[in-house]
Image: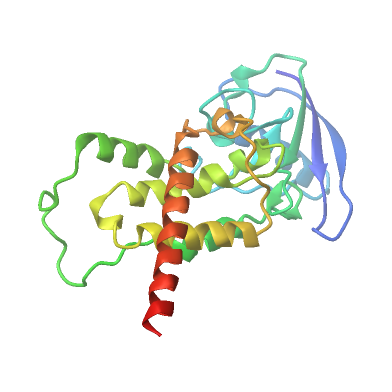
Length: 258
């Protein structure tokens, strides 16, 4: 395959970026998208140019680090597929491909196709945990969990934190990511002690990171490589209302006690 690539190049977050054109010949249709970028970088290095910076780790659709927009779509044109699992047979000989980083205020560009998604880490750190006693691991079947709840929790836990939902959202919202992380703990018995405090803390941190608001466009679930549904946003909103009621009741109780 022969391809025309327009790749976003940006030296740092403080510098201006622009698309850089490259002609790439002899690309195997069986290679992955990242292997195609490896091939491009080999040519750039051989010619004395700087290689394109892009992030990757597992290349198995698990780590969520290959965050890039391909022809205007996060992770590319194939649904339920990360950029690293996208194969070049998805494209045709002679195609023109535009490659750029995820675009969101909360995801500043580090270099070229690499963005800083540490905002997701801080949301997770704000409440994505459960309180457990230290010691030996409990017996797996000692806590009964309803099948429907365990299935829903597993689906929510499939979120890899890639940020495609944010990049696809016209508002740059992180509601789907935050809802998935809140729900997969809130659906399990182990996550009940912090259920309401968790949602308040994580939503507060999400707002502090300057993500946009959700206006129900639904683009997030369409771009999600793991197919996570926006129904988890509904669940998070319900828990958020419950958390605020309990917080208000606690404040009123303390005031009466005084």
